Length: 85
Image (tube, rainbow, N blue to C red; front, side, top):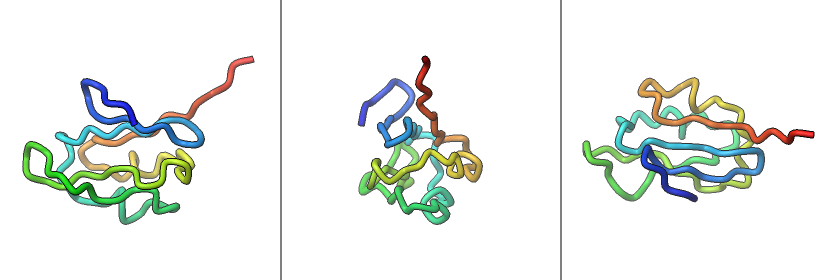
């Protein structure tokens, strides 16, 4: 996991997942509907008092992008790593 100015970023098997923890309002849609159950609820609150998602199994995330489609707050997204060559 790497921290950025905008949030936390995790390396997955196929790219990256970024979560803006202070933007999250704790709906947990991303956690509930993740097809590979790669996300879990954090043990910490964000600055608004909500539990935000974190990656529990980065190697199992397939960067499907479903979490970012479901997020009403645009606080999570995935980036696929593309090999150039």
